[in-house]
Amino acid sequence: MQNKTVAIIGGGLTGLSIAYFLSKRGIACTIFEQNERCGGVIATIHEQGFTYECGPNTGVLGTIEIEKLFAELGQSCTLETAQKSSKIRLIWKQGAWHAIPSGLWSALTTPLFRLVDMLRILGEPFRKPGTNPNETIYEMVLRRMGKSFHDYAVAPFINGVYAGNTKTLVTRFALAKLYALEQNYGSFIRGAIAKAKYNKKHGIPTPSKQVFSCEGGLQKLVDALLHYTKANVFTQCSHLTINPHDGIYTISYTHAGQEYTNSFTHVITTCNSHVLSTILPSITNEAKQVFADMQYAPVVQVAVGFKYWKGMSLGAFGGLVPPKEQRDVLGILFPSSMFKNRAPKDGAMLSVFLGGMLRTDIISKTDEEIQTIVARELQTMLAIPDWNPDIFKIFRYPHAIAQYTVHMEQVLTTIQSIEQANPNLIIAGSIRNGIGMADRVLQASNIAQSV
Ligand SMILES: Cc1cc2nc3c(=O)[nH]c(=O)nc-3n(C[C@H](O)[C@H](O)[C@H](O)COP(=O)(O)OP(=O)(O)OC[C@H]3O[C@@H](n4cnc5c(N)ncnc54)[C@H](O)[C@@H]3O)c2cc1C
Picture (cartoon, helix red, strand yellow):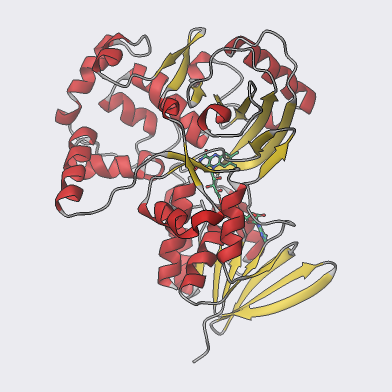
């Protein structure tokens, strides 16, 4: 029997993690990456005493797999959990920041939510579970919690995570764990309590859910994965196609003007849905259309650094902006408050997010226009007296975050039928199984087990 040879298309966090887990099992693999570097959207820059991210700034230790991964990578990538103050999350409402309530008293006195909705929450455990499998997050929150919770907790959270629209994201796909709690236990609150009890009774470890980065930035995670994986890594591969033939996959690509062809027993794709139609020419036109129709939120991330910070106190994770407030930013993170050595002493590093599904116009604005928007918003929202940042870098992601809308039903069915027709071809990445870094590592671990 032929030895397993695995090709991984895409060297972002998903591809690198799959390669890492496969290497641990002694399975050889080859990564094909179109860019000149691996890491995908994860990249860290060190400049003028600042350390800042081009893509994601933080992750959540939301699965045991990502915790284990950091433990295994050891000192080559030191996990850094966020300072205690980052438990404070701010929400913008009517011209001021307000902390998300962390206890009963703050919950009852916060100006974020209406008292009637606060009282409504007490009835959540007794409310009937939903029956519409395609219920949107907006509909679900209105049904279980109330409008002010939607507007000033869930919608800004969804802005921060999905850069998405609560009226189109479907709970079953976008908040799968929450959906399962409601379906299995009848209520989020009852479900969370029952699950915690069950895990405790059966000794099932639960993840800490702490906010994390790495000392020196998330690039360290990419470097450590590359260091430990025994994969062959080919970068700058263009015009890549995957062609199945008699149970073997032929990968053709161009590198430095030369065409190459290699054969593999297994292929795992990790790129976004729009790329699949090109790299899998043998799939049906119908399948290509389903992938082409999948939506991704466009996001602009701006790193802004000040050597001397003169604005408001930044002792928090950052601030999220509800769509209802109609401002031009989705949120502002305070990385230098969360993690060490992100800015010179007395300075500050900020990460500003703009765009998303509700402001798709922002991605096509010029650098000057974005600079004007960010300057205006930060001066107002963070009380910056003079606008003289030492770092101002714009990063554009036209297809940043997969949107798990009602269309996911078709996407998942299409993936299933392609995988059934092509044994050992696996379609991975954030096209399914979650968009966060912890989701990517969990998916990678599961896939590596199944190969
Ligand atoms: C701006 C932004 C902010 C984010 N913030 C957070 C956050 O705060 N917390 C969090 O948990 N997650 C966040 N995420 C999501 C997180 O970054 C991703 O889940 C994760 O990094 C995605 O990894 P990936 O490998 O699946 O995809 P990618 O990083 O996109 O990697 C895919 C790789 O495939 C390559 N590729 C594409 N097409 C081809 C081809 N034809 N041939 C060869 N190679 C190809 C690409 O070049 C890329 O390197 C954010 C994402 C973005 C964009």
